[in-house]
Image (cartoon, rainbow, N blue to C red; front, side, top):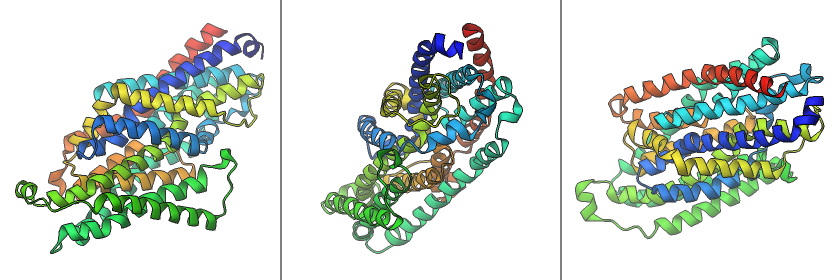
Length: 421
């Protein structure tokens, strides 16, 4: 308690700096791969991707980002034994933020799309083992995280595979692909609006004190889906057949229908990412804030201040602008060749999986889901359409993430403890 009283302000300043560094890493790595499909498919430019991210990442973080934060703060480790030594938990959270941020910076510079969720979880496990004891780690929760390495890309890949097959059956393999593309496009866009808004109603608005019943949530989500479908239809109905473009690629005119559709999935992906992944950067920061503001109360459940959510959103957007292009290139260009229709299927599948996962509060990885979705799109065209060397490198970087975060967190924990003790 004395250490908290003496150094509380310095600790909070460090928490804000490390939290900003961590969210910068999330933007450089995680948000970059969320937007990589849109950029890789040629539906949006890098500048447009950044503009979309600024708006919808902020909205996702502020409107729906309060839910997963609890899992990060209290789900992975049990802090009850630190009631009399709150400073240990503060050192641990600071060390975890710094360790995860450093690993993300290394991975982003290499162009590896790693999991920011698993970076912070690995770091928390590392701190808990040396700072509290191995028994403080909730190994059952860690097991579910490891399981999500398999489940989340598999779910994303399956949904994207089915979406590609549906576009093939309903649009590409018909007598008049352009006419059918215009006919079914609003249905796909409706799904984007409906799914994102429904899960936001279900999980994200508690800290805004908006309580809706299940029926009301379905009603609002349906209206939102109809609204997005109507806006999409206005964009799509103006698209005309282009015989010149069709000469070089027979489906060029049909792909033009999917380009505005990808704008909707890019917005949805940025929103879903903000709602699910901002927690990775601000969860430990919120824990430090609550301990220091309460004078050392480890177990209190504090409300999440809006400035922490805004700080998280700002850091993420900054990361995308400065270093995001490397990971965008890997996801958008190197795994498989993407067109607007394939990119749309990958992003809709990924956004759906992310919001379903965040509904359960399970800290899954947006990266794993999106890479799985892009893989599903590639596999729908056959194994030869996927660059397996790139996929293997990505999987190796995933496996290294947990131990890398844990080892660095251990080192930083002892360093911080030495500085403040």
